Image 1 (spheres, rainbow, N blue to C red):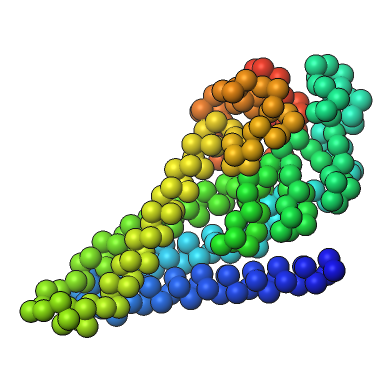
Image 2 (image 1 turned 135 degrees about the horizontal axis):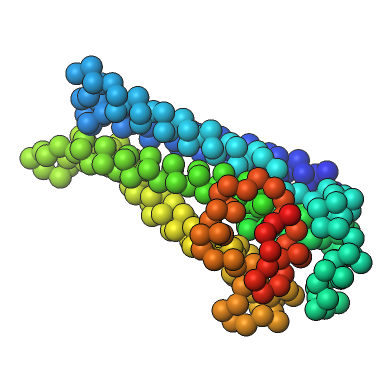
Length: 273
């Protein structure tokens, strides 16, 4: 049964990734084939902006696959957890106030030791370190190891989408009647609507993720705070992992090391180890 589920996830992942690539290039070709700014610049031999636009599209597709196919931070073995965090006895000595409910526990699904901020993903059937969410458009989890790449993808994608809106708008031309206008601009209008919808979605996603990153929080923690053992006993506005906006952003964008969150689970915690 587990093997069938894995094969189903793999098949659905191929379909979703194929759909993303096809949609990206169909919209891109539409913007270049219609009478838009990009098309006119290309015809005049002014290739700097068309080439830059293509480069950003390629970069967004590359980042999409980086996030979609990368390891989000799967917990593989108990030994891996203990190397990162230390033994239960060591943690109890370092954090005396840590209650029994917050100490290392085994996942009820995969039976591995589950570090703090990790969560078991029902879709991936794995525990993920610093779990943020499972992204159906990526067909992958967003976690400790690929969250930064996910934010970079959203930023590049937003630039491409906003630029695409401007390009599509530049291609609309006036006609005598609405029927003639729709016939002449139908493909461009469809591309404009698709790009517009995705622009709003990506803008909201990027804004929410940057906000949560600045607080050193995750989507899962923000949405399910009342059900998470290590947050339930904190105040409504208290985040035990928050070290200030600048330090949170620096740690997120500049650090490449796994963090033992148990060692920071104190007011005014120390730097990651």
